[in-house]
Length: 399
Image 1 (cartoon, helix red, strand yellow):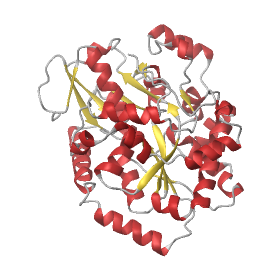
Image 2 (cartoon, helix red, strand yellow):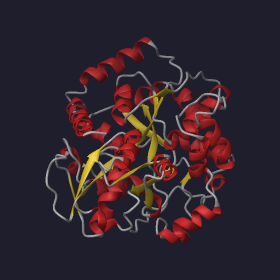
Image 3 (cartoon, one colour):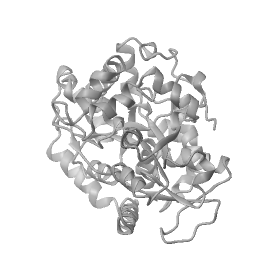
Image 4 (tube, one colour):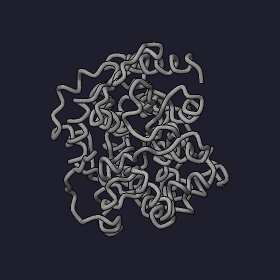
């Protein structure tokens, strides 16, 4: 990876930021409206990145769970970056996506996209990976660390982690001189992160799995900390759907959510099998990853967990967090806390809309949980996912 790659990625983000302002999004939204009018009975069209965040959507497709609910589903569309995912969604090319939870805030309130969160896709499933010689967070001072997107749980968590270790997150050109206590954040697609770390263009990255496991497998990096060990059971990716589907096709929307919830339950009980079907060795070749790397994430051994506790990647062993886990209910307390933290996080581009958001009102407006509640009740309640049978919880964010 060369300097031009960083510059290109930065330009892509700036371009997308301009495009997704309230006015700039109009051409894409017009396309969305035209597609909805011309194809009111569109099948499930999933857009995804080849990361474990997409697991429930891909399992639902592979296992025929959409068809079992009585609706049609096309083969999911693999996209390369979060920018491509949101652009395909806003233009109507796809109608069901897994999206970084902070990106849904940006899309709805920064870009006026008529869409809502209908469920969580997974919890945890991300980590901070660093070069092999780095053993402490403070050693990242004066260096660059990659994030997958400014509006990501990764950006929120890593900035707090840096601040708690006396470091200052900044966004500067890659040629800029950094102070010893500054960490320069650069946006990279997940697939570009391991090569950038291997070539020493960056000192670390924070991203979804399996790119942390991939760095371990390639021996180009080590996991410094899992995000789920900082924000307990945090959502990373959520299921995002168009309001015109939720309002005009409620039965179809309910069946979509039913299939995703059932896919999460299946995955919890078939972790090794899920790793195999998602891999490049699987029947649909959904991702370019090996079964070995995906198993390291979805079905890690007790020895793996013990090693992470010993290294400090896991510091709250009593939380008993999985490397990645699945439960669909979008707890309001999480969305409220997310909004508060976004308002105090460095985010490049147009972000003035964040200051005007009320956390409680945003949680009520951004999320439509009527479908997922019914889906959860149909499979036996939240206890089916190993949780207390309550739609309320308290957030735990501890460095």
